Image (cartoon, rainbow, N blue to C red; front, side, top):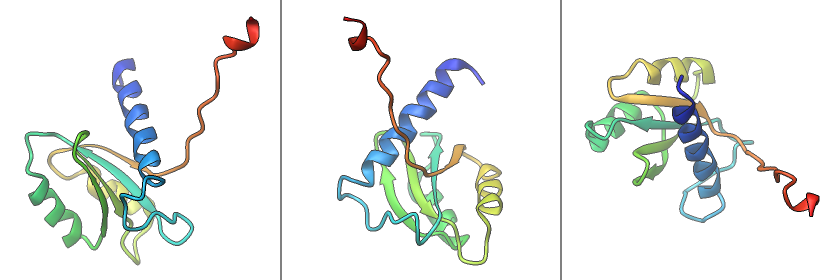
Length: 113
């Protein structure tokens, strides 16, 4: 994968994690349910993708409008790996990642002064 794509995915994951603290989500308690972050091609209808996500048994926690993505629950009775595999095979899906906390570290630039 190209470096720029990896950086973009990392930025989107950080923003997805930040959304959990913004109060814009219905629920974001990873201790109770597994959450996946899905990004899709803007050429695909988000409503159509949402229907396919929900028909699989996943709940949509949040829709990321700017980054064309969803935060979704892993359906009951499915493993995280099964759900990731299922969503990666859907047309229009660019990336599927487990939602997780990420911590940014300082570069040490300020320490050198």
